[in-house]
Image (cartoon, rainbow, N blue to C red; front, top):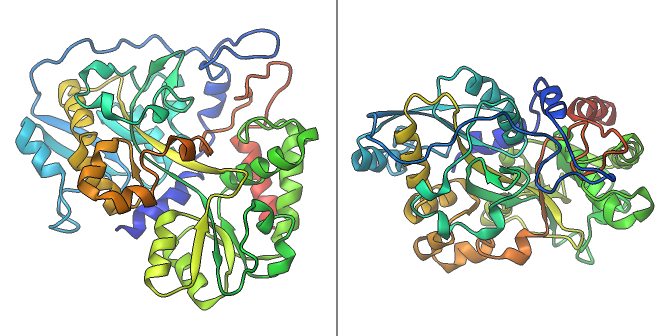
Length: 404
């Protein structure tokens, strides 16, 4: 496992807002207050899609989250890049990035062929024309990727895929079973009932955590008319911010490093709060009495996508990488190393049923309860055209106010 990667997942949510104006002003939407389905409120630039495979160029420049393209240099036993190189003849040059904003900026240089983009970066890359539509017919095992990860708002526009799904996960509610009784079932335990655990509640350290509050309000305060936790007008944002300011008095710490959260639950400094499945497993493995659940309201989460640069100098090796990394064996390797669900359900034949059951790999009903990270933009992602939504800049400012 890599603590750097998991720490950087939190940093990713702190993505910059430089490209948001571009996304917000990129085009048209439908009428009568409803955006064209799948349009995300903009029309992407006219970027050609590769139609067929040609000769391998002998090289590919990969921009990836740490843990997604391991070549054995960090751990000799962890290497799925070398088999790719031997299989294709494409020498992989891997650069890791620390935040989604860094990935977006690096892709603008044209120096990289493929990128593993999170949902708070993918639409920006599409809107800026820095990535091309993906011809899924050129991806060998594309049919085996779980259908609930395809044609989604963060990886497609107007029915066209702009990437290949890679891995995903949910933000769960974890609690100390020896202290938190009765067992919680709702996010209300860390919001409206947070005072029961005064000074012992932990929360994710990022503006994107506002979406968690918005999701809870969406399910409990219908008068706010929230239909998408990433599409908040000013009134809706104010309500989420108010809820989080109330919660602030009961927060033990805002976490970004998963190892620190493990330690806090072991010592009892934190007894309830948001987490990831892998954190629960690590904490339980270190004898902390914890359990993580998906609350009744559902949760936020992430789904990462491999995308190809519109300026790729090695497009055939790039497609070869996207095809290879979504095969069952590499998918199983990455998922187990990183601690997430693989996109290709056939990886379960390699990981074994316990891992796949724990991470709900093929559980479509579970996946449908997750609202995957998506960058808030002024053109409302829920399709409203009669109002302006708040963008990530507004969320960042609000987060500063929340934390004080």
